[in-house]
Amino acid sequence: MQRTPVSPPVSSFRALRRQAGFSLVELMVGITVGLLVVVAAIGSLAFTQASSTVVVDSAGLQQKADAIFRNIASHVEQAGAFNVEQAGDPAKIIFSAGFTGFNKTGFYIQGKEGASNAPDTLQVSYQNDGTGNLRDCMGNPLAGTGNFDNEFYVDNGNLMCKGADAKVDAQSIADGIEDFQVTYGVQTFVGTVPQYQYYRYDQVLDWRFIHAVQICLQLAGDTQGNPRVGPAFKGCRDQDIANDGKIRRLFRRTFSIRNALL
Image 1 (tube, rainbow, N blue to C red):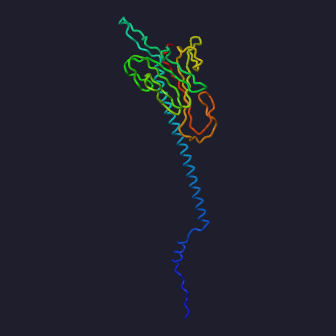
Image 2: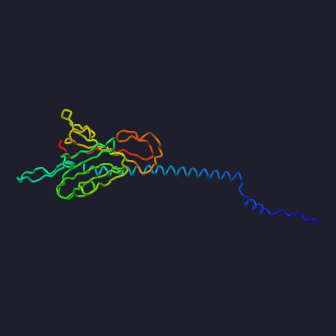
């Protein structure tokens, strides 16, 4: 007796079709697309990290420069201040003879030119008013009615502050300092119109006529995260500085000496 073959049900074909895998071509295409997505994501992540580093470093340098200038300004703007005292006549007052200038030189502002274009030194002096409210560049008070002598200079990339107390060592108030250049504004007259001419330390003829101080800060970021490899950076002395990937910023600020007689 001959049997008639029975065809499998349609549902069995559908089950087999659902169980079929990808072909080799489909698998290779899928892997390629996946790799392209991963490469694009890695590139986007690297760019985002580099951009974030630039933004963070730039903001940090701006905040550091602001803090430095606030500290220096609080002392430069008081330079040459001395106390007013009661005279023998109750109706009169006299200026104190106790102000002797920085390190008893008689000058309220002076400095030192950095050797071979090294960072400069700034020296500022004013008299203590005896109230205990004044502080030196390290935030320390001064006993008695002596002079506040503050000195700012750069040592191994740190902006150092030497305060009025000779017993207290100088301390760093900021790091990442590549240059600290100081020029001094001397008042001159064109007819009756006052003008200012700025000189380096070695060009100043008489420190008694300094009316303003201009400071240039050159700061560098902490990481080599600058993705732009471009032309050399121009420093405080207009010198070229090779681009090594660090974020650099130049800041200039001019401070008037309020106690300088016009």
